[in-house]
Image (cartoon, rainbow, N blue to C red; front, side, top):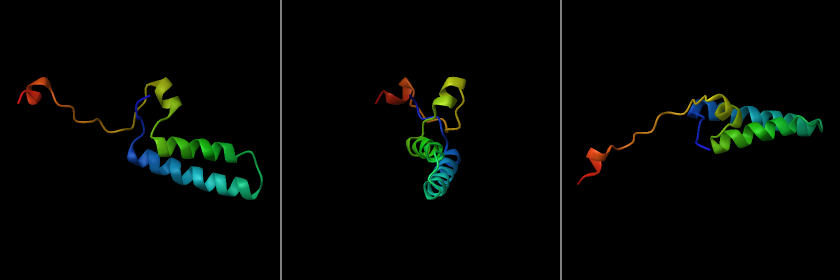
Length: 71
């Protein structure tokens, strides 16, 4: 699966996931699983839901064309 999360999206998921996990673990709640999922998405840069919907917030990479590679 390609990276489909941009920098801001990843940062938000990492922060939100961390906060949800800390609070949920303090209260011994199953919400920690949601926080863990957000944290994994943010750290890996991949979101299955975005992939299913064809959404990407990641910047387009600069790919070299064949003309640029003929050196």
